[in-house]
View (cartoon, rainbow over the protein chains, first blue to last red):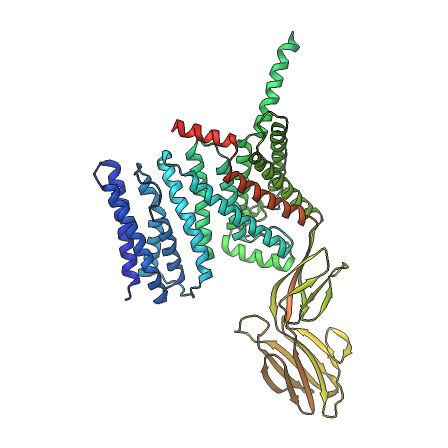
Length: 228
Length: 339
């Protein structure tokens, strides 16, 4: 057995610990807990990133590498330094699920195809990771509306608008019609419409906005995994 | 007396309707409904409209997946969501809402009620872009046509059936060129050959095909499927079969089987790739590689409105996100204060 599986296992353990500490901090005020949670999150990020080259070298299925990369994008605690009730634990939920599925696939009984990993096959995983990170933030906003991070939401909406628009223009230029009915294309457009609805929703209702963003980002994560 | 008491009430009713029609709430609901419709197409395979063969294949696959529920789902219109009356009505309603919002915002901006600033133009661009896009889609629906499955061989120029348009494939099959006004895209590529034959004395031999009454001295065959032809003067039948187990493409090897008749018996069998010469008795077969491309041709008069609409919407949305309008900013501050 190579190093990839132990590293994945350790990172999943670190994520569970960070989530547990964040939940504990919700009920008990302990000095330095927020700092410890941040440190463990950074450690989990490092372990996930360290696992990626070993997954590649050990020729493990591409989907596991993509799941690990997505989780590694979700975890880093960039931005807010003050912990908010429930927020920290919920923002890590997508990373936990992604890393957990990766660990289950690599260590569990399920057999997955060992298709080749290419740089281009990692692009959907990067987009999916960004969507999963925003999904975590949106879940955090649902749990704790005061934590609304509209700048991240707006940045990813802009990115999604550019991706959807460029895709539509390219299809129009190459094939003469804007929409060919491909499921991935419909999914992307559907996610963009849901996010546009979120963008239109009143700022005084951050939970409504967050719920719509959860729908859109969840769809983007599923699409990214399917494209992978 | 009655008139004076009713007039303000009626005015209020119209004002309320106007506010609902131009407000964010209605647009939000319409966008969500459109998103739900599109997401349904992701999970439910949509029925093809390209022909009975494709429909039969889709139907058998769908029935295998959904079983007895297929009929009920079909009745509900889940397999033709974007072609349904409901979805089209939704898009029409969306267009109407965008138009009303454009009028309202334009009127507010240009009548001097709101202070003029460049960033106030971005929401207008979004609305104009959206309207242009929907107009383009309507034009596409009404007047566009599409021809699928045209087979063009390299170096060949082909007329699109029933039109004056043409498509041509370059010799290396990398690029398809086409007449102005249409768009052609390559869907698939495969092997093909140009065949000629001569005897030992240098005489050119003729070919006969089951589907062609005339004899030809040269045949251009796209190997989409097996191809057969006879050389009557030499009493030979030739069968060309693209080899299975290889990735489909212009370099796919081709199996050549030559039969002698009567009675029909296999004379020789070989696999060729690219250009080749094959000698059978006193006949030499010259096979020159001439790959084919399967092309889809689209005529869409709504192309420019659609493209312009998308571009304007992207610019408008980008601008609105980077430079929010005063109204959006004010709402944001209020929210922060409340928080």
